[in-house]
Image (cartoon, rainbow, N blue to C red; front, side, top):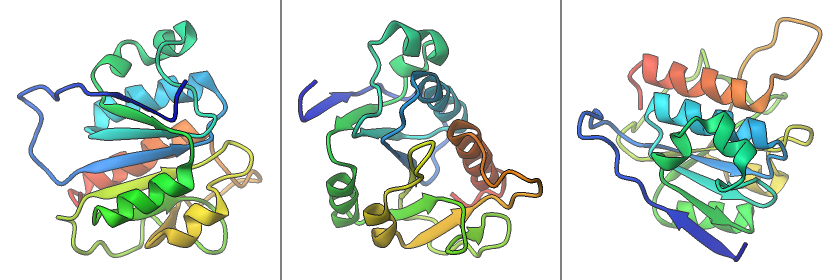
Length: 173
């Protein structure tokens, strides 16, 4: 795989015209999580996936099996360095947010949305380490999902699903 790879897929004509949500997927290890991220992205109307670092790309039969064809309809691109991609997206006047737990995050259920017309790129990170600290340092907002149990995190694909559907449900983006 080279430094850059891109797959463009037009959204169906019936897709609603709304402000865009894109996702920067940085160093996700699991092929199955990435397949699930493609399926969730299709259902939630995500306009682009930026697959970065060690994140598997479509072409792998196991990813294709989990994605159930969503990898053919969601535009995506591969970038070796997630931090550099985040800088590029900010330079394109996109708003970079992170989905991350911890004390620095604000509950996704309680923060104020502003300027929803500007495209948002939601960064998600590695299953064990979370979002890269360098990427976090670039983020305008760090949002999290409050946890009620003993465990302090969710599966990354599950967390993304909760976040993007919450944002869509409240018609904020």
